[in-house]
Length: 118
Image (cartoon, rainbow, N blue to C red; front, side, top):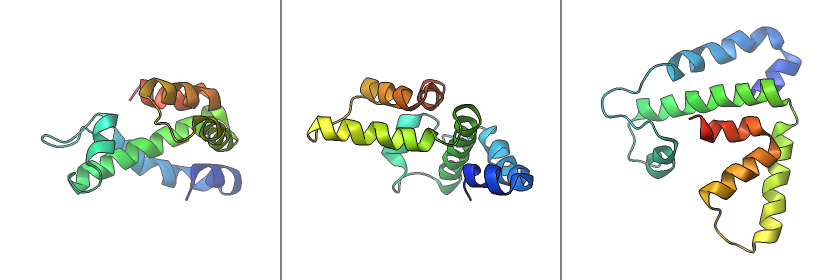
């Protein structure tokens, strides 16, 4: 379920949706688990312990709920529009980290905060 759908259609179910991810996100990954956002991109496809992968997914779920709370239901659409607009101008060029954060901020600063405050 997505937080936006639940918030709009089944608000009484929000605690069930957000409690588990918030609890797991508050715990550090065990041992030498990855913690940095860049590590997720590098290692998620097979070199990451499943518990660590779940920790990232929970952190991302908490971040999505935070964006929905502060930026509203239209944030996902604005994000999609920002990426489509960039893709139309970029002619296949890779996106630098700095440009990515600017693009996220263009959609909504709450989205850029996910990267800045990871």
